[in-house]
Amino acid sequence: MIRLVVFIFMISLNSWAMPKNFEVWFLSEDRTSFLDKILPKKKSVLVAQNYQCQPMGEFCFDPQIGLYKKGEAQALDAQIENSQFENSQSYDFLEPAKSVEREMIDCEESTFFDVFCGKAQKQLKQGLTPLEVWIDTSSTMKQVDFKGYDQKCSREIFLDHLSQTCPLNKKMKVYYFTEFKKEAGSFDRVCMSSGLNNLKRLKEDIEKSKANNLIIITDIFEAQEEFITWIEATGSGKVKGIEKPLYASSIHKELKRIRKMCK
Image (cartoon, rainbow, N blue to C red):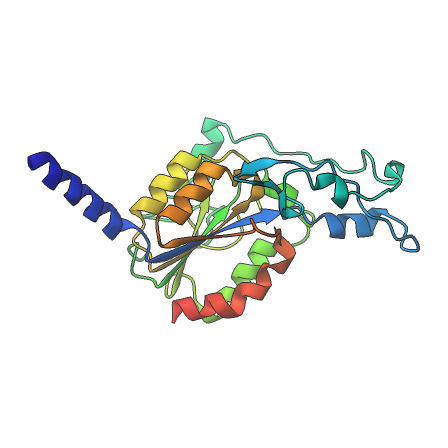
């Protein structure tokens, strides 16, 4: 009897701590925009892809085309000349931060004063803002959202526009995450790409969150079947970018809907 009471209590506690509503956006690499840069404009060329198959029931998932039925990949291919773009694309990932470097750039939530964290600001306790946005800044994000070191990435542009309606630390709180989640005092670290993710820790952070509305922006490489199943099983979580690709360049289309979450 005691065990049953404890079990019910733990379930109730976990349900209470979960966000009321949360979404996880899995961003894919925008293959189309890449080809526009490297292929002749006069030629109409389609990309022959080696389709990936991450099993999801009777379907397969590929980060470029979304879900497709097993065995149908051949029908999706088109004849092209690969030599025009083969080996043209590469990514110079930054090495994960060393422990000393991590200590230098970590932002203490209580003081929040560091050259990488932006100007010190008075912090609000978690759960007091109607909207939270968690931004993945791991090394693989460079593959799906990188415009150059002299340009803002789509995630930073998204936050800039969102903050006009949902001011930072008043109606919205922003966190960066890789292995650990850190509160943001400004948006100047959004486009930094280094380190690795820890899905187990991310799930734990979601379970502990008291946010009314939570938006998590990560990349398609984190779209593991177990993680997606867990999100949908919570009853309050949704995923975007699985049934069809979601690109960093198109997340601004969600602004009108997300702005309503901070009112």
